[in-house]
Length: 112
Image 1 (cartoon, helix red, strand yellow):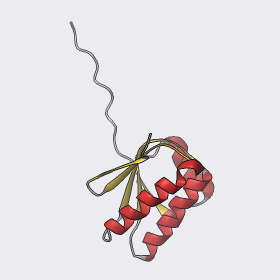
Image 2 (image 1 turned 180 degrees about the horizontal axis):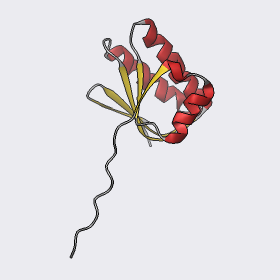
Image 3 (image 1 turned 120 degrees about the vertical axis):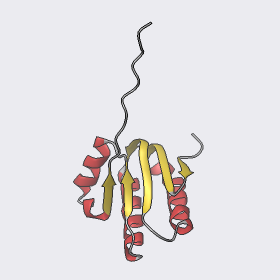
């Protein structure tokens, strides 16, 4: 994948395996998104993220502190259960707003 992100409305969607090899791309996209949306909370859609390493967790924490100083919050939307556990394990839970959205079950095929 060439780009680990997509911007839709006021939300930055990250996807794939976010590790040290991709941290520069993620940092660039994240800080461009923060700077491009100077008001309100910063929302990251993480529904497409497969895994996050400690480098990316530190990057997210630093971004959360940056926006917190501006009176805003970093919202992590649609985190997987393992990612929520990673946030809890780091002790950085207070830095983020964890937002869960309801996902629909796949449609079942109807009678033939």
